[in-house]
Image (cartoon, rainbow, N blue to C red; front, top):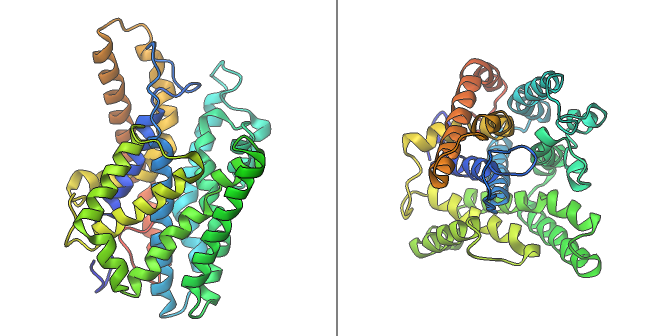
Length: 361
């Protein structure tokens, strides 16, 4: 970690790359947005795990930067302006592109204008919970959750004195306890359970707790989580759960991945005992454009489907071609968008940064 002029946390871009590609890979054969003419849908739970990893990274990094800024003075207006410059440009651009495309797409469920207000005001998790989302931007639910988290978290960090760790732990326990109680009483099919499962503030709290302990240099925490055996265990569980080989009870699945994600974060940024080096150029490249990857990938999948429907080749080869094509085009479009569009806003965002970071989201 370099703290002289610009904060850089090792491996976070690499973890973002893994999170983004997990979502893309899991969504390639998702019903509704894809019809590649293949007989089997490859169902992988790695999409949800990738989103949870994103949540934990965000909770960790936002808390880290806010606490560093607090050493000077947290400017809430600047915080929100930075978030606007990071999140809004490509978010709204993609909505506009999808609206324009809807005039040429025959499927009636591709884009429904009467539901657009949920997405305009960052409440996409509401129609997602109700299973009434707009197909091509249904994945915006997670961005809505993050934006809602930002409404209260910087204020708590700014106004808290020495109790932020305790507040974070209590918030996690409270939300998780409510989730379990709802599950026990009404079951996993209830709207209340779906709402709390989707709106994973407590997963971001796991990242926040880890960030506070990291900044405070808690020796037990750092030693336990950066241990090579702990790291090996965490990577193994993350992969096995992502592939669906290891089944964890649904009510604790997101929480399990959250703690596993925190272990991976600490293992990367402390460097010494990491067993996988995510500082390679390919990981940094994908991590840098990961937000764009997450935003645009459903449309790439949707537009790519007709190209492969009538392709009659060996099935394994067809799957390889489909995944290679979707990943390559998604990376290419995301890179172009980042280079010629997002970067302008990111450069402007740095003017409002109290603490400079080369991995801020």
